[in-house]
Length: 596
Image (cartoon, rainbow, N blue to C red; front, side, top):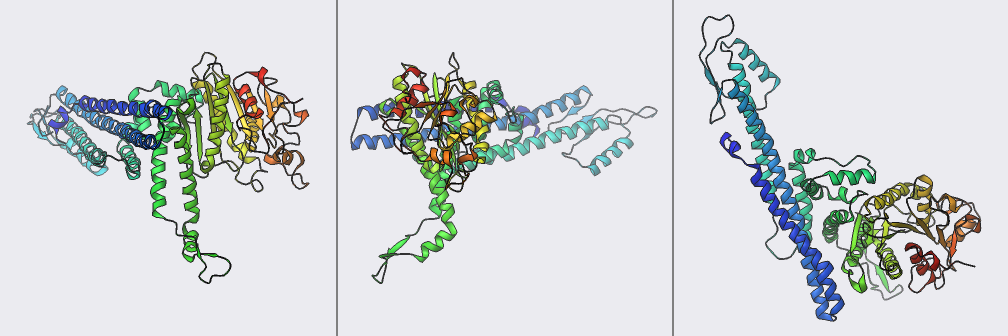
């Protein structure tokens, strides 16, 4: 970039262009929300039949397209601001060098060279003629040494200063040229295919584009206030509120996964960030699965004898090479489909919008899904699932909290309710091999405490909200560990099918006296495993103590579970167990049925 171009560069023009993309992105976001939360809701509630189903699918695609536009506009906006930032830094350096040169009586020429006046050093009799020097960018120890030597022997005292200014000008021009060179391909890459469908490949390209913008904009991004390291939810909230709109947008565009994981931030913000991650992750998984198509596993036995079918050799070889990866990707896809199904169900029978407060496909996967906005809810319940829970099987856990929301909303007397599925830990995946050990609960408990603290920080109601922690099976062990390790920040605790909670009595659960509630359905074998051990040994779930919440000595309120049987029916409709939980969640304690 030459001197004239850099001098005339106006960062404000690029920042104004960035604002234009912001406006476009905001309109796309509003259109997406309108389709998902108003138009789609109206369609599902008022129209039925195949035509309505087809229209709904088209609306889903349209909403996805608007989401893509919103995301890409965010990237373009950040890229333009990053480009303007880099060039502005170089321009300020150029202007400072030119101003210093003029103050010292030197002249900066159109080509960046610097002319200096005649002069003589102290003690010299003859005045040395003036001249012009051309600077060089960068420099090295060797070139710097040579320049110092040249300045020392040069008869004109102005030569050294002129050379310094010329070098500073050369550095500024090179910095501007480098910025222009690195940003041009990144900005050109920010374009969509020339069609009307946002494909999986388009979303994968978003991830690539994000990496490109983050790489090119390192200086810009490094200039932004960073999230507090190991910050509390209150620290996180203070940091986010202290950012300008532009700074918030940059963090969302370039660091969505980190923003979405920060407890204490508004639910709207976390949801926006995590939906970006979800869309990109889903596209990546689909394309990865397409690369490893699964061959047919069984074929008819050509001999016509028993067994009727035999396993194909091709499948055996494929399974050895790809089976584990294919299974992981398939589970991730199933979990993401379940989350999307919940998004699509918004408005059905009054179901509120869903908020994705956490998401990750690593290991067994994690997801935090809320029915309703916990920031504005008067009553919020957070449910922790137990053994075998993972992203692939999250459908059932989301359904449980959907049922609890419906029951609680009917009881809340017009007050707002939010129910949350919190799969925010690595749950044990085997009843026999994993569940006896406490480290799954102990490792996950700090994250649960942090999340509960974040709900309290982000809640905007006058009372700060009424929060209930609900655990099922090994999830109760995690909640017990959370109370043992730190402040639980809950008003009530509900256990269902608990094998043990790592504390020996309700008073140690870090909630007000009388606010620990327990359910044990008829035929549920898990509490007995915790109570009596396994096979007569001293083995206990989660490394628990001998007393469990179902025991009288523990001191919990034992709620009735009429209509529920076994280990998995605590959230079935028309059961005492579901109604009792809803009564606790909404603070309607007089409606709770206690075992006699």
